Length: 421
View 1 (cartoon, rainbow, N blue to C red):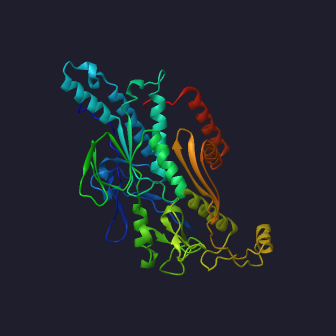
View 2: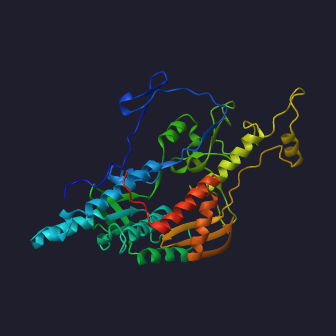
View 3: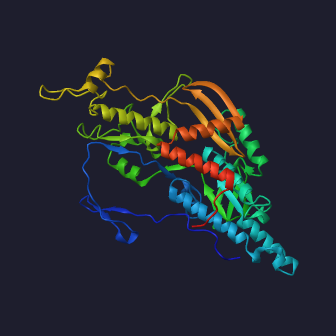
């Protein structure tokens, strides 16, 4: 029962150390390579965020994250090892002659198949639904590889709020809760995560001193974000007014952070989760930072790419087309921009197209809107079709679209690949 069934959830971290003269020194013992210096015209900061798991004792050391492809590989391996361990003969009741040993084997097998997901936002809800789909397929009868473990699997969703998916409309929040509970997910609302250990979590209801300890195998953090070390380092090189809410970097309407000098202003552009871009809708009394979502990051990336491709002078406010000398080549693009009245770059405006979330069993939640105008809400199978359509349409290339579509068809026809690499 003491055999491990998981890998270390945290990757090896490298460190950056600055000498007294300001030069960079990397610690070779931490697996760091040589340092090179690159000159740039524009530095585009799109580093995203890291998991804010350090706020709970033990979470940073024992929780799996969902930020990078390496995180997903480690989680996939850990789930595969948990299934393999739970299928071993020495955790089955028939292996032992006495009742006490049978009970301990049963409890250990169920512990190895108990997974806690921390966070009831879109990531935590979608992950819980996907886990239910995965276990339902690999444990189904008669062709599931782990069909004897069907009754032992348990997924627990821990959320500190009173409702799941707080960014969605109320009717969709209730639908998310009922859909997960129908699949057997144990949803703990108004619940705080107190501590995380290698084989347990301690949770407690808000406003109560009572703590419940749950033995389990895997804890997955999907609760909050924190700035990556690069953002903290960049903020140290910028004026104090560049520090925004949540450790993000304040930017203007053209995604430019403040700078110490006019020459440096406009050379750094910050987008996505690292940027604190304040916007105010007609229904709000005061401006607020845009949410840290892929929809915002995608629109900001396209906006900045257009500005750079058009050759705007990013040091001026607003950025405008630079003056051309008599000997410079004729530019059709410049004439086209002047004809359209785009001698100066317009500021970024975020257009919200709604929210999507998958809840398992080929059901999804869709909140469709254009800007501040809500259009309609869908839930169920029809919403699932729209969710998958948007997922495919957002892929960067037709090659990726074909590969993902083929993977969905293969999974429907032959089941999920549970090979452990």
